[in-house]
Image (tube, rainbow, N blue to C red):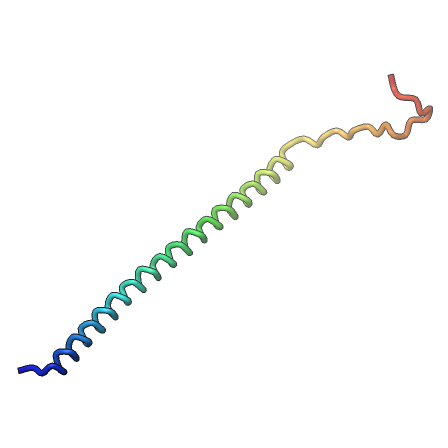
Length: 85
């Protein structure tokens, strides 16, 4: 026959083991969620960096392939001071 004290000890032991198991599973779920969120944020930042780099390369490509623009005449040095008509 099992005494009252031993039954209570067994109940406390089972509850403690069950609690530890559930807390462990919850911790694994949280750790996985943190890992996944961190990965997504990293991927998002990488995408932004890649887009910025692609934009820079496109701009440099355009500057290299487009003909040089003609200089704009400077009208600020008119000798008579009258506007051109």
